[in-house]
Length: 286
Image (cartoon, rainbow, N blue to C red; front, side, top):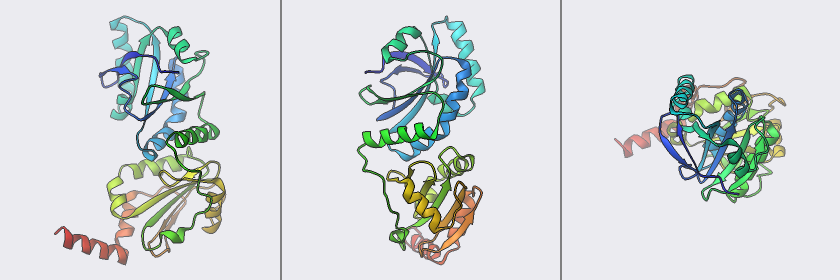
């Protein structure tokens, strides 16, 4: 099934031709038909934000689908939505479509307008996965697995040997019940703002969940492996925790609350090995 051709505008007032202007190799499309369904869309946003950070070539979009209206009414609706969404990225990724709703639903085999739909659309406009309704951990895991399979990833890692990273990387282990836990989403939001500083410090970030498949960026990590990691570091079941492990394998920080990247980087920069790294960098780049 192909995504139908449609013309719309995002909340940055840019005109777009769909599906040609979807930018990803894979695109997660969140479709809503009624204004009240925005609350249901919002249940997916933290998770799809994380997926976009995790998978190269993945983008997500919100598509409010509205019946055809005249220019004045369309402008009134769009500007009202724009005023309620100050974030530039959210404005860019929200594309309003004013069209024949029954024909659009028929083209995508969407049975009704009582709930939202979640689609994966590939570069060739094929709809390769779908779900309906509010986010649940089960739906999130199914979406993540589908993306992994489409991108040709291997099966999850079933055993984590953190000693393999000794003297090579520092590790930030972020434990949470699932990917929608508030503390987890806040921690990942903070880290997402500082990618260059993370890479500079040879820091790998592990997302370790109690209820669903975990990951180290692209490689998936099984639930059993994540639970073994909880046991190893004595992290209580169903709790949130952040652990920083140095290149020597020692635990340098442990917190039950999100930790600011400034505090993490500041601590790393006091470590003797990091001090030597910075000295070497200054000699190479005086």
